[in-house]
Every structure is written in C-alpha cells, then in structure tokens.
Image (cartoon, rainbow, N blue to C red; front, top):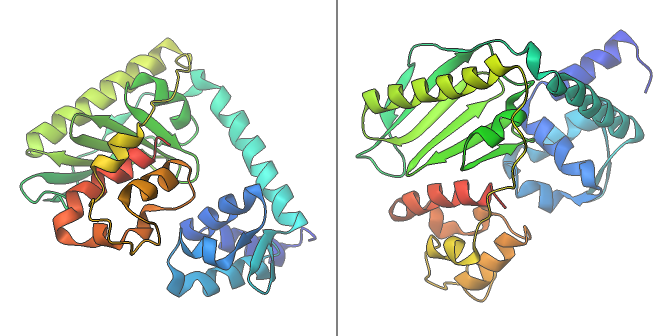
Amino acid sequence: MSENPNETKLVNFAMANSIRRKIINFLADGYRSTGEIGEIVEKATLGFHLKILKDAGLIELEEETVKLSEYGTNFLKGKKEKNAEEITDFSQAKPIEIARVKQVLPCIADSSKLRVSANMTPPLSGVLKLLEPLFPRSNYSDRKDSLIIQKGEIITTVYGSGKVSIRMVENEDEAKEELERLKSIINEAIAKGEAPAPREKAKVDLIEIYKYLPQTNCGKCGEQGCYSFAIKLMARQVTLERCTLLKEPEYASKQEHLQVLTSYI
C-alpha cells in the first residue's frame, strides 16, 4: 500500500477506533476466523469494522478467515517498535496530577459500593507498562493499554488515555484516598527517574477461577461443567463471554472478580 494522503487517512480512520485496534492486535499471532474475532468484539458490528480494516489495506478477508495483510503486518510491527522506543525513556516521564472526580455511580457488581471515574494528567501511555511492578497485584494489558490494580476488593484501572476507574469503594472519600495513594506511588517512581525492576507476574490458581464461576454445570457454554470451563479459561481457549449465566444480575459480582482474575492469565 503506497503512502499517499488518501490512503493514510483511511489507515488513520481505521486505527482511531478501539475495537478495530483490538482486532488488529488479535490478528498479530496469525489467521483468525470471524467466529473467533466475534468472541472478543460485538458480533453485530463485526462486519462493519472488518470492511473498514480491509478498505484501509490492513487485513485480508477470505470467506470466514481473516489475517493481517503485508501492509498491516508492517504497520503493526512499526507501531510496536515505536512504542518500545517510547517506554524505555522512563526518565522523561512527568509527575502526574489527578483531576477532580468526574463520575460517581453505584457499582454494577455490588450496588452498596461505588464506581468512580477521574482523569490523570499527563497521560502515562508511554510508561504505563513499566509501572506494573509498583503494585503487588497488577497486570498491564497491551491490547487495551491499561493497568489493572487490585487491592482487596478495590479494583483500579489506569488507561493510557489518562482515564482512571475505581470500582468497589465504600464512598467517594475512599476513592479519593486511593487516587492520592496511586498518585504518590507513581510520582515517587518518576522522581527516581528509572523504571522499577520487573517482577514475576501474579499467578492465578485454577481453583480460584472455578470458585467464582456459577458452578451450576448447565452446559450452556459447550463444556461438560464449570470445572472444565475453568480449565479452558486458564488455557485461553475460551472467553468469559461464553458463560451466559455470568450476565445475569445475581452473578454480577462473580463476573467482575473473574474479569480481573482472567487478566492475569
């Protein structure tokens, strides 16, 4: 694909959407079926997003099979190399500030708790991955450019865009305390001017995953039972979306815990 202005605009438009970026990263390991891609993005809009990526020359679509085009492979490789360059210079990171709390709503998993949104400035997209070792229970997602931090029941997600989300807090004051704690830890590391030493990833036990599943052995997921489903989750052969019971209100809390736990797999 040549680098003319119109084609560049098509690529920029295609990659401006988080769902399409997710699809491109998902294809980095090779061929995928449209069914597999439909498990990680909304199926109703899958065709629309695939068409845009194809028109931009980033993917090749043959019947029900999708793969990165040569241009798409080179584009993704170049993007990763650029990001790698950006995150190595930790000394250039600037101290952060937490903007005022923007939103306070009941937590989906437990209506007696709150979920709170705030903004962090400047955004830490370039060094977010390197901050992972600062927190005992945390995991960075390259696909979402987000850092999930767990402290007891409280789940904090920091996005590369600067958005910060805190779930399962008792009240707004507790959320503000967590935000101040987050700011203090990050700024202390930035002041040192060097990235924290990498640490071993937090490990998730199979029994821990199974504990939060419905344990009804209904078979709706296509597996013999919840334990078999847990094994498939640990092997990344299925996604949480396959368990339809988790979408019911009574399992909302379990689903939220599982979303965090599976991010460590």
